[in-house]
Amino acid sequence: MKSEQVEGVAEKLAGKAQSAVGRLIGDSTLEAEGAGRQAAGQLTKTYGDTLDSVSTFVKEKPVAALAIGAGLLLLVNRLLRR
Image (cartoon, rainbow, N blue to C red; front, top):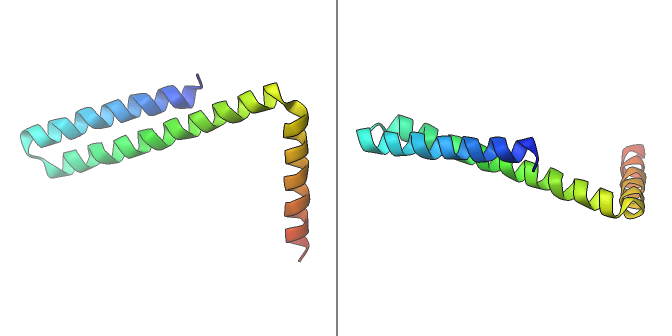
């Protein structure tokens, strides 16, 4: 598990707690900040999941990963030449 995944889960849980406290005391600002932290945590976790998936793919299929990288490099090169 990547550190980004752990950070994302922790941030999401902190956001849920903050949102719940805001709801409990009737502070809509605190509740909204908690919702924002939850969203940020989900984004961080998704980023970590993506890194993990790419890392696994590269380890399992290095030739395919190299071919994809070379293809993307050629595509970007052609786009930038225009």
